[in-house]
Length: 294
Image 1 (cartoon, rainbow, N blue to C red):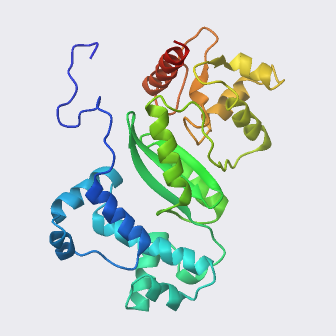
Image 2: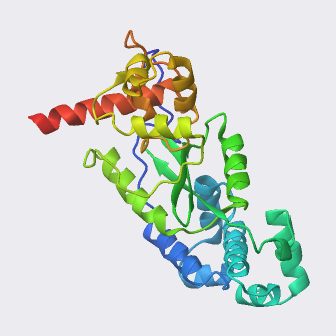
Image 3: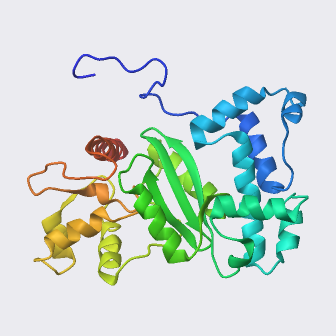
C-alpha cells in the first residue's frame, strides 16, 4: 500500500477472516462425533448444501477436498483405536471400512506404515485455522499444544518431521481437545481481549532451549527485550548468539512470544513468520496496552 498498490479484491488480505460458517461447522462436528460415517454428496444436497462449494471451502481452508478430510479423520480415528489396544479388524470396522484390505491400503498410503506397526506410536493431530495474519497450523498431542506456526514458515516441514520423530507417530489431520481452547484464546488475543495464554504446551527440545523458551514467556505483553537483555535475564551474557538461535527454533508462535525480542538498536530482527508479521504483532500489543491504560 505504501508503494501505491491496492489490496487484492479477490483474497482481501486486509480483512479479518470470518469464523467458520455455521453449515461448515455443523459438518465438522458431525465428522468428529462419528468419523465412521462418510457424508456423501447426496446427503449434502439433502441438507441444502452444494457439494462443489463445500469442496472449494475445504481446499481453501485445509488444503484438501472434503472427501480427503473425512478420510484423514477416519484413519486418525482408527490409529487412536489401535494405539488404545483395539485389533486391526476392530479399528477397520469401527472406522466405517467394509474391507480390511481396503482399510490396510488406505492406512498405509496415508500414514506410511501398516496398521500393525502403530500400537506403540502417538499421533500428532494437526489443524489449519485462519487469522488476521494468514493461515496458522496447530499441532497437539494428548498433553497439550506442540506447534503453532504460520503455514508459509520456511522451516515448517522440518518442524513437523521433528515432532513426528519425537512423538514416534504420524502428523495427521484430526481433532484434539486443545484445539478449541487455543482457537478461542487466539481469537481473544487478535481482538485485543487477551494478553496472556493459559493452555498446556509441549515443547520438545534441549534443556538450554527449554530455558530460553520459558524466559520468552516472562516478557510482558506490549513490551520488548533485546537479545542482550534476554542473555542477561538467563545469566548467560556471552550466549547471545545461542539464545537467538533457540528463539528461532521456537515452534509455538505468539503463545511463546519470540516476536517480542528485538535488536539492541530497536530493529526488527529475524522472525520465522516474516518481519511484517513481527511488526504487526508488536504494534497490535502496543496499541492495546495503551488503550487499556486510558
